[in-house]
Image (cartoon, rainbow, N blue to C red):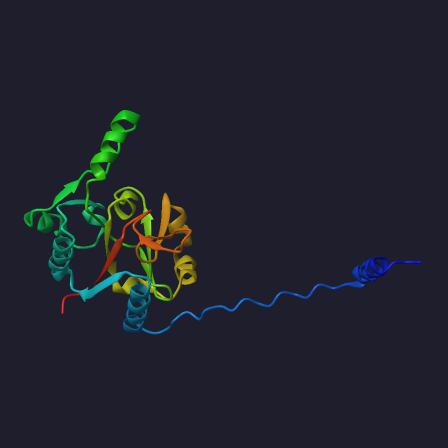
Length: 228
């Protein structure tokens, strides 16, 4: 006589011979925003602010230095870790910031371990990292940064405050749009960094903390295409 357990197991074995697993449902895809530059700027601003970034502008190139200076003063900054001025798209920016009394630290790191560690300690004194940006992604409010010569990764990762200059014309609907037009360019650079707001970390008690693994503040300065 078979037991109830054996009967259940027999039915399971028989069912497995003809069982067909259901196909998983197609994942829902978020529709990328479409429209002109002004529409994309509005969506980008909303999404970037939703994840904790502060968006300024758009400002004209001639107004950029004054806008940056206000952000730096509010952050109590004196020392800056920056990209090469030619990589940030604002003529005369380095000279303007120097006249305002800001010190730019040399981001180059020695090869030998002892001097490299010493240089990293000095760079760690920078209160603000100032960079350009390769693109903005409207659907998530994300900055895209490509590192390489003149574009040190440390500038967007090491200081507690990150200020990024983003031309409004470089805001795209989504990451797919960026990769479809710049996949090779992304591969040609040492690193591709996607930044969605300040660094955020949650501990075991679900307490959210900013700045544990990157900047605790992210400021995005949108640059208009031309002077008003």
